[in-house]
Length: 438
Image (cartoon, rainbow, N blue to C red; front, side, top):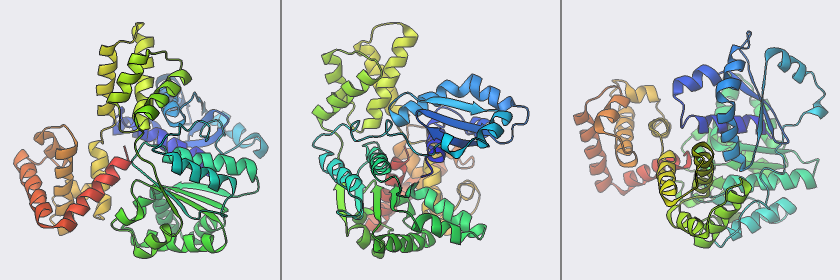
């Protein structure tokens, strides 16, 4: 399973919340994930002959990266940034000295807080992990972003790797499956691509909804699914919605996804949220009063990821301000966390462009093709309804257009939605994709 690369990709997504695209490109564009073992992520800058980037990453960004790793794994993780010389020595080490699989300490069933909202999905995932391909195949877990779907995928993987050491296990995100397919087509490596995905014993695909609407990707995944299923191999999929609600998913894939077991995860109820807050607080050494636990659980209700982020931010305030945590501090942290988990303009642009099969550059350009104009207007509308930013800023993001253009675009989309239920579904679909990226 390509875990080191996947974790590094997740880290960059988290860093992009606070760093500008220029900073991400400047310091991390040529960074690769070398290894992931125990509680250590190893990275290396490919084009860094003088070790200048190495020194900057270590000096300026190491703690930020470690914080991102804590958010991903809900536990402390170390970071090793290799110099060019160290990289050569590391790569020459015996394979037995290195590992590219997730440590069971990171995502386990034991660390998953079970409540009424996720009990069924947890039980189904555990059954699959203990006896792959004998009960529920495929297992399709769905629910909003931040509720623990990825945690369950890796918990399955960790159990399978321990219980069935000879199993070939592969985790991939739906979006990455598409990107790998494009690369394989461009480099004439389709044989290797198909071998990679069709010769595994356990395939776990996170956010499968992102293949919807992509004709060639769906064609390839259809045959991959059939090959594995017919061979008695286990398939586990996650999505932010059930198959019937993935609007542009081909019917033949929808029926196959629904042929196994569907298990949904709902937002945690009050008691489960309290348990999660107490668990995360204990894990990170934060002591709160019962009143504070109850207050947080009443005001942070959407997902587990927000709860984790809030606990970590409270710890940061406590350590930096050297003071006791009070209601005022909790209120401020709740407000900041909710803003942090809002989508960015970049995510809205990317997902809108992807949906209409155009590029972000097309949206910002002067192009007047039908798909480009629709994508541009939809993007403006979504920024207007999903973000708290002024019309002038929305216009600037879309190629320095004036605020009247933004108003007209918003009105055009609202008019189309009122006339066409199908177009309204399109907007809902794009919003769901955007929410899943947060």
